[in-house]
Image 1 (cartoon, rainbow, N blue to C red):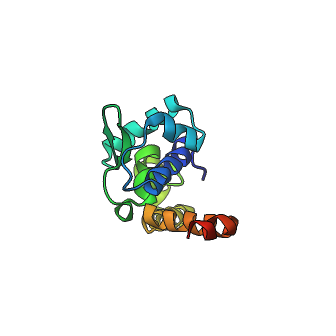
Image 2 (cartoon, one colour; image 1 turned 90 degrees about the vertical axis):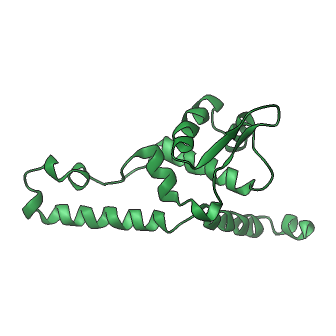
Image 3 (cartoon, rainbow, N blue to C red; image 1 turned 180 degrees about the vertical axis):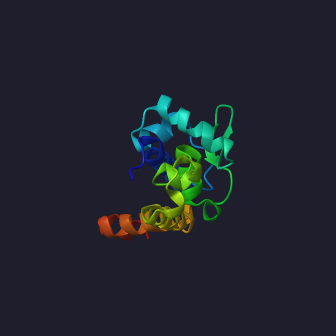
Length: 150
């Protein structure tokens, strides 16, 4: 199973918004620049994220985008599902009517378990967790900068 750029870039953009939390909205162009994503493409990703209630936009000179709720209340599953749709690894897991063999198919059961594990993993990982991971990574990768900021 492979996430498309929609899912990958969407998670990156949401992490950027979470890292910026409490400092007001980030203008679209700045958000795009920070994540090296085309502003036009990023804007298309923000539409379903806004529709899912994960981000909100602020108009005006100091406008931009920010998280619609606290980062500890937004899971990676919320983000990926809003951008990618259902995360079933194969069609028959999402729609049992897709295949006549579903009832007696052991492989179908395995794909279903795999899909459930993926949903569980992403559901239990929040943006707040990702912010902590990013800060730890930054601290480890740039110890001199982290100590100077303390």
